[in-house]
Amino acid sequence: MKRILSIVIIGIVLMISNNVFATGEDAVVPASAKASISGKVLDIKTGESLAGVAISVEGTNIKVYTDLDGSFTVDGITPGNYNLVLSLISYKSSLVENIKLNPSSKENIDIKLDAVR
Image 1 (cartoon, rainbow, N blue to C red):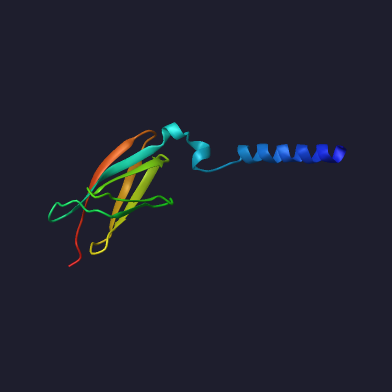
Image 2 (image 1 turned 135 degrees about the vertical axis):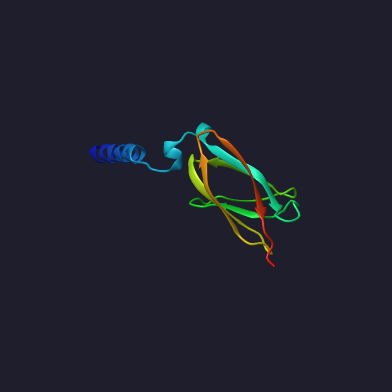
């Protein structure tokens, strides 16, 4: 019986210490304080919307694609400074730097890509 009680106490201590020392996006910022980025990706010369552009948020595993209208939305981002990397076949890759996201902010940006010649 003492052995089972010791195992249970050790398990509880480990769970509590794991929560106290947890580090990560969700441990620090509540879901209600997450930010988002949305916008549209266009061809720099024609102004046409670009569908299927891959948009990655540097420093995260977040990757989204533009829809048929060239629009995109990235939700649930922890506040901070981020860079976006955009890529599409037949277009030069683009880097959008230093997007500052505050808690609960909704940034809206339009991005223009240049075709490879």
